[in-house]
Length: 150
Ligand SMILES: [Zn+2]
Image (cartoon, rainbow, N blue to C red; front, side, top):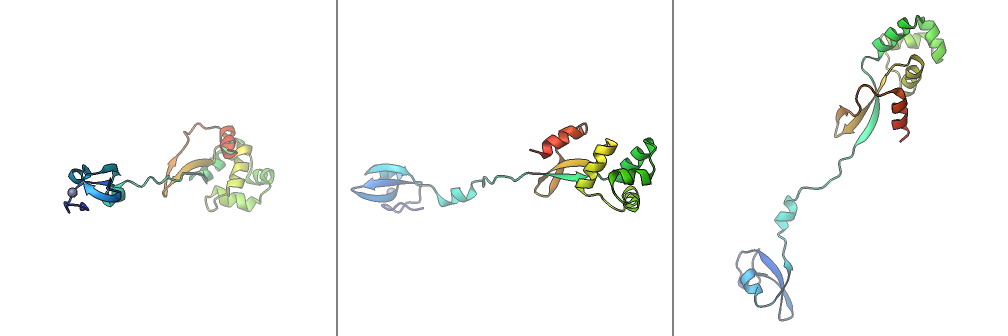
């Protein structure tokens, strides 16, 4: 940026000189009253953009849901048929879920969670495509419900 008065390349000051607003260098500014320092356009461009990073908590069904459901069901000595009936889903669907061919919806996973008292849903903080666990492993189902209702 150049001084309006002497043409020198310098830091400029918005200065009122004899009733006129001029962008002048420090030396020339002494002829008038400095109003404010003139910001270089380059500086503003270099300023880091203070964008707010949008964080979204999303529910995901755990990767090993099939194994978890199967193990729990077997421990409870329930047949697929019996568990399916309790969950009000088709036995064939439960079979697909337990073999990992079908990922239950969040709604269904919640139902299974409540019934089997196991953890099938994890919450992830979605941040720029990257996902990281937002809660430690020992979160109870009750806590998860609280978080969901936030
Ligand atoms: Zn000057």
